[in-house]
Image (cartoon, rainbow over all chains, first blue to last red; front, side, top):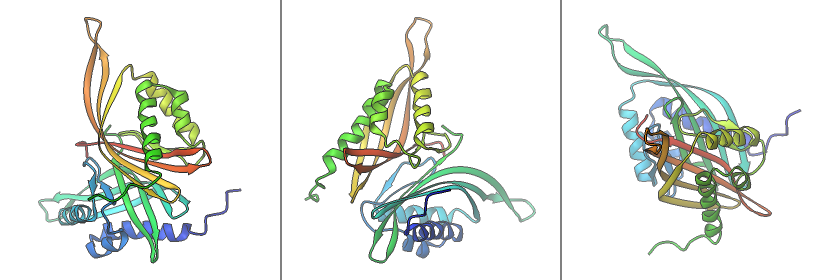
Length: 140
Length: 140
């Protein structure tokens, strides 16, 4: 028998899902709704240095969305923990993305495997992401 | 003027420093003191998949220590946040490590740049690491 789920687990899971929905949709407004807008937030995209503060985090999403015509996530090994007003999710991002245009007008697709730690803090209106750290598996 | 530091910040900073001291020393007992011994802990070494649970986390440190004759960290850009019983530290690990033996009997040294997110939870006896995610900068 597994342990009973934390009462906040569904809300955290929804916040985490909203992050990937915003990412797949390339939707900066939806991504802004996911994040806490503060100086303490940080993002580490695979292979990138860590960026701090909502302004730099938002700018990085804008740049990624502009350069990603198509991306799809299959999420596996999701593990969720809640401790007071903080929650974290670890998972594997199995990514299919467009990397360039083909001669026939179609998109070239490539796979990638990223493992991520997503950190959330609860505020009055719900759970907000305060850190995302994704790293390439197999590139160490 | 910067904001006043959280009262728990020095203890979190000490826990984070103890992690790197244990790593540099290749000291599995000291590393065990740093971590929470539970199923929820996770570690992501640069380029590795995420490992879950204290048994797998401890085994990974044992393997790394056995294969790392020398490692030295210069830590930069340390940012520390505390929220209730949880704290996280982001920082850059500027690493100098031995990668092999030279013909003259000395060690070949190489540098590496890793960016990390370290997560801690407070228990009755202090702050324990529950997640370490390190990733190679420039390898994405």
